[in-house]
Image (cartoon, rainbow, N blue to C red; front, top):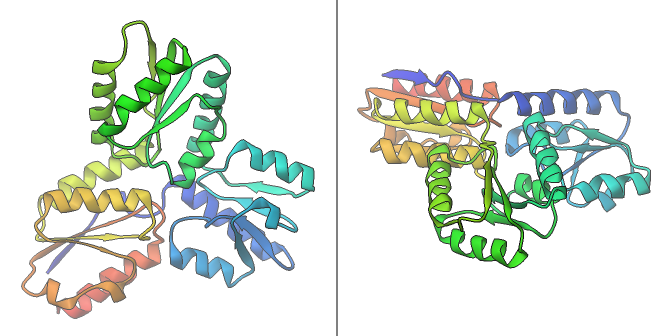
Length: 287
């Protein structure tokens, strides 16, 4: 059995920064360090940090002391509320997400309507929207474009900014952009910023290429991880057998019978030790 691990697997720079700095904070803090929302979308990483003193909360009002802002970022009002409460924030928002916050705030202040391509319920999108105003619309699929353009026309604004969730599927982004261009009124000034993270694009591209060459594709990561779900979608489209697991315990050994070549890709929130555990397990059971 041959096992091929994708070169772009595992922690991205933003997640690595968030996890490493969160570890430093919980180690030096006596007592509880709060984190607003799951630090990263990986159960194993979060549980390990919680065992050392990290406490996940859902609202800033629950914080009683130092609080971490996770990699996904938060709406602007959270910073304002924390300041009023006298809560010290440790801001571990991914720098790439921070740039989108600044972009949305700048363009919104300059009378642009904002289309954001992504998942409206994802914490990153909720945070991004919090730096804009009422002239903001989230596009998840092609079916949303008609309504988005209607909202733009109703606003009477003549300038449009289009951005994306950092972990959105790059091919779907291009399709949606082309559709927007085809249906946008001629009097609208359009500005497009492809804010998909380059690491995400590379990981998606490698997943596509690798999944075409193997008998079984294994995607490792948190079930609530946006970027990992997209990797699984890509793998499933290009490999007859593809599975999405969080740990080695999720592997059905019947699936690896008579498999000659296995490809592995891990999401941006998946730690190296989780990937190594899966590889070791496959090597042991495969033999």
